[in-house]
Image (tube, rainbow, N blue to C red; front, side, top):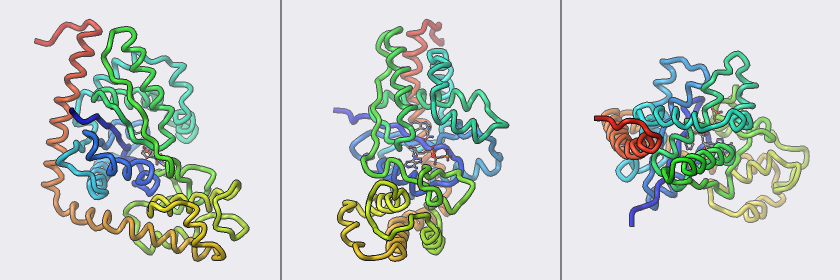
Length: 331
Ligand code: ATP
Ligand code: LTN
């Protein structure tokens, strides 16, 4: 039987962090052999906030290379830039006409991002989840591995698919989220009641995948914790809970086992140990990244061939959609 389908993407804003790694990339790597996967650098989504063109182009490439450096296998999976596959924008328009303003007004990411970008609350920021629905539905996706912050967008994608299918007949597969039990919401190192975000203005709030080991140690030492000294997962200890979660995600250990190991030790020792598991966990990523950045032809081949495949696969859905809604068939 054919493998089931996965689609996921990350927008090229800021720099990839351990939160993106734990919440998304690590799960992509885990699921990539069991499923047929599309992993995209969703550059069209990045346009919803102002970008410097030169910077954006550079960052898009760095993101794609980091996907590969994390261990995504480009032979078995498709890895491409969203803008290279024209069907994403095409389907987004159609789905825009099947989505209600009220649904989009409820999206918490829209509310958060409009508060942060008061001078640029553009229509794209508002319809962002519709483009995300198009990304997913184009490939008849079964499963979408994301962090918990994307759950609401995914529910909207399911609603849009269900509504469209109800009106026009079976067209889209209704996708399921894949949200890991541990690490679905990694918190900021500086304000642990807020999620870690890759475009945080304060670089001490996150660990970037490409941070040097001494930078990782320094950021961990500065991480905000609490005033007692127990390394224990508990209510009111957001900072320590977060560090325990990061440690557990990198080592695969249970939280209780980590607590037992650090019983009687202070936060200083624990923070250094967290830094060490991150440094070791990211070492192969950093090394592979450096290597791939020297190999631009190889990377070019991967994203070009992947985009061609993705265009062909998604075109099948597009044809079906145009037929169902009553457009005249292309000659
Ligand atoms: P930005 O700050 O630029 O909005 P972000 O850090 O929120 O970015 P996204 O591009 O929105 O990152 O998300 C990429 C993927 O990483 C998504 O699957 C998202 O759910 C996941 N993710 C983002 N932040 C976290 C987090 N703090 N913990 C776990 N997963 C996360
Ligand atoms: N909105 C997502 C990025 C994204 C995405 C997708 C994730 C765009 N299209 C399709 C999964 C599937 C975010 O993380 N901000």
